[in-house]
Image (tube, rainbow, N blue to C red; front, top):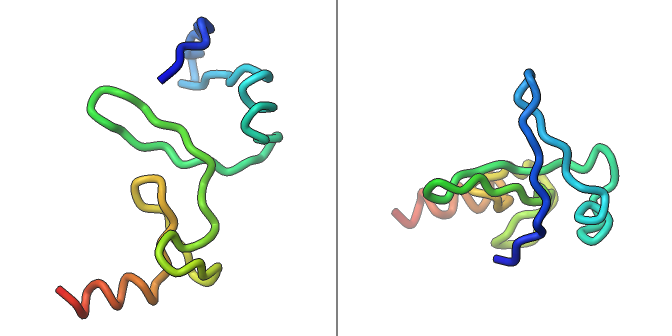
Length: 81
């Protein structure tokens, strides 16, 4: 993972500001939904997926570990287990 050399402080409400250069580079305008998850001691921020990672559906998608998954795929996984 490349370091940007940018350091931000967490404010009193627990917020940080993502540098404009990073937001522009990743095409993340204001109000872009992001998912937040942990990998060990790292906090991972990713654009939230509005489509199912497995089938591409846009219906009833929830984000799990940074990936979108629809209710139909969840039901199929449960049936297989």
